[in-house]
Length: 204
Image 1 (cartoon, helix red, strand yellow):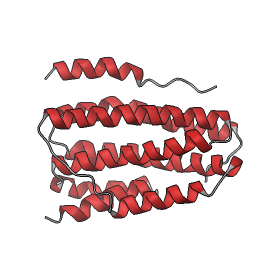
Image 2: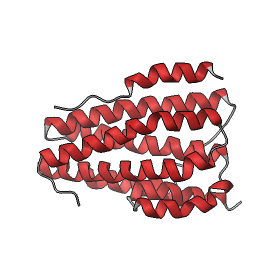
Image 3: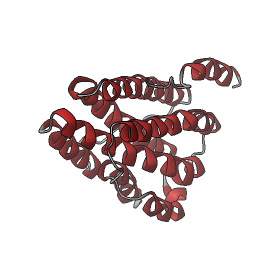
Image 4: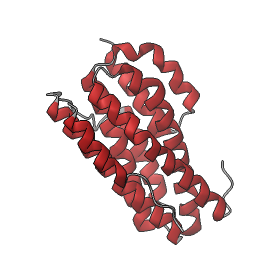
């Protein structure tokens, strides 16, 4: 049985928070590529020395795109998942990342920050490749690959939020947002690992 996430409580937290209140392109591409291609979190930490060069607009763009990647992947998992636990996990992730992305978009609007997500980026190409590969799989083979993808994605997402996006952000409201959603991302990772173990899929 899938353990329920803590994300519903973030709605109340969001209300409280809302009441309280140029070599850059290559850096952005490398950061987003880390997520979509599943490079180890330690590599992300190496990017922290360059975070001061990221504008708030670029940070929002990275975050929006990364949530979008997992929204699409989870949507696939919700449909193609073979085991009930995999489908339930995918539905939870789809719901949570959709809510989180909209929350971040609302913050950007409130703060007058405009940004554009680059659909032709290297990261997008990597994500599209991963999606295409998952599309070719079915049954237990799909479940194993999907869970492995989600485990790596959330491990890297958590590391990059802590080591890159949080330190680079100049928006206190967005920093509060990141700190609020981190436990939810950690819950996604824990549930992914739990389902992997219950289904007998050893971590790659």
